[in-house]
Length: 499
Image 1 (cartoon, rainbow, N blue to C red):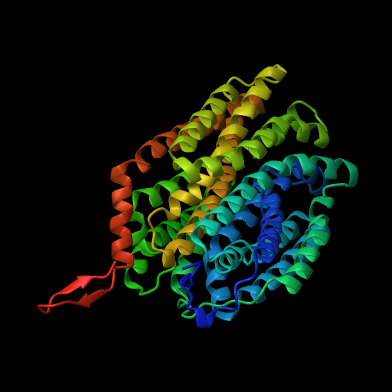
Image 2 (image 1 turned 45 degrees about the vertical axis):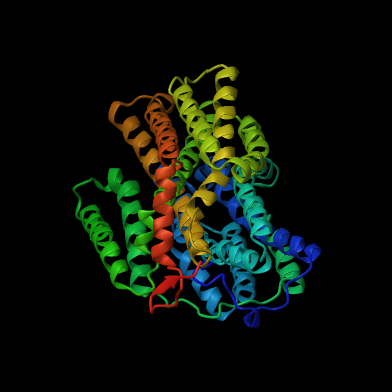
């Protein structure tokens, strides 16, 4: 299924396959939507100091500006895909573009911090209708397995490219036109994507849409929302305050009930059986770790460059150029390596590079030399550029075609959850360290960079384990359970599997 709908659509339920030129155009339109959603994940980081000064926002408020977007996006990705499969992917995709553009306009007009956080959530509702639905459109358009794999490779590369370019583009916009411009830039791009989609993308639906798992959806929202609120607001309210204890109880209850409920539902939001596949579980863990590293890296780095070093938004964006440049170069290279040799090598190099970057930054000082910063940023860009394609590949590795879309959607959700956790955890750890011992921000940030290093080590270890023949065997067994081969009668009355 592709985000809730069978990819094995019978010929009678599909429109005639578009020619190659039209297929490439449709892929480009889908990637354009992915680009603005991915860009919005990171472009806001470079504007945080300006927003903080203009709206008088505390550090926890800055964390919510990022996490209101990523949490809503993570919570609704799978549901939006299922709705699109039922009522029409093109229709929901167009709706998502309208909501995203409207949310961007409202963000640019936000009169205060609370309004900005609320409008970021509106943006995310629109964004949730774009990525998974676009993946469904791509899968419905590219029916040849090899072409589909190449299209998904391009898709995965755009994820890394858009997120890496965010600080660079954001720096120029903030300095030239104010922080509001980072939201206004979405409007013409979104409208162009809307017109192109209306003109060139055909409608498609699933022949048998999945049922909505509303209980599972509510449990996921409670788990992510309450859990993140505990992490961000705990230091301010006090870890033993009634509000934090209540939120913690809600999150813990949702964490326990969610997997129990999913096992009882015929068509769950997230099928627990997926996690018996080591490559799938590895992809989920890798996605959370890699994007937690990215979220924490951008959050801490932005505050360091602008608040400690005193750089302007443009200068801060330029300092991230080694990271952005290597991500741009390595993302497509990673896709080709994964296509030819599998995900093992990119995962191992990515984990090692991100860990090394974190270790280098644990020695950060207020006046650290340029070589240390450039080296650390380059290593992080190398690692992050290599890690995206293996995540999607490992998530769907060995899965039946009918389940590949759902597996990819879970990987996308894991990316957003990871980024939310990275901003929440690293921001809270550094803030707490600064408040407890009264060190400067730079010294307090060392704890955050050690976490980034540890996450890189986890990616490396997971890459080692999840790419072994044993791991591939677990994926094959899961595939057989999810999509057992049909059995046909043979002579003697026995029924044999039809392969």
